[in-house]
Length: 172
Ligand SMILES: [Fe+2]
Ligand SMILES: [Fe+2]
Image 1 (cartoon, rainbow, N blue to C red):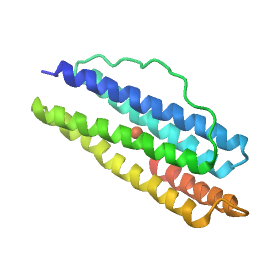
Image 2 (cartoon, helix red, strand yellow; image 1 turned 180 degrees about the horizontal axis):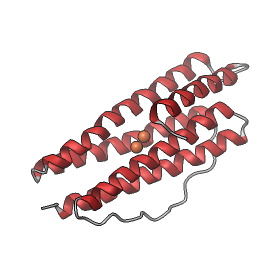
Image 3 (tube, rainbow, N blue to C red; image 1 turned 60 degrees about the vertical axis):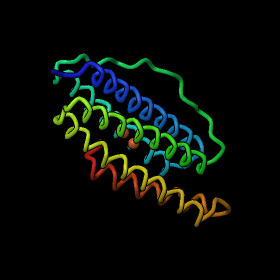
């Protein structure tokens, strides 16, 4: 029997992944407007990846006999003061998603839904990787600095990360 409380929380996870996808799309747009094309590619890929995360939970809910709900679209921020702020906000957003995943794991254990607990392991690993990724990018920004050619090199780093991501995640 699929717990209705778990179904509700999984639908909440759908809305968080969807929100992350929208936020990264908005960041891609901001980067593109600033001519940071490498960073824009990175955030476009990041947005696609979050949509895949959203779909994976979405389909799982229905597979379990629940009802996956399309989250309402809320406006996301469109303006950022710098690429550093963009990355800081990304890390912050990932941390929010991580807490939700952990909460879901606790709930699945509580209702002894070990299948769902197993399904959630992908998200546990994913969130750890994403927090490390954004933490590393922030470290690089600190190291390189945003003065002079700094921005150019940060953009190149993000371009390389985007290529890697597109390859490993099989994104278009
Ligand atoms: Fe995600
Ligand atoms: Fe993420």
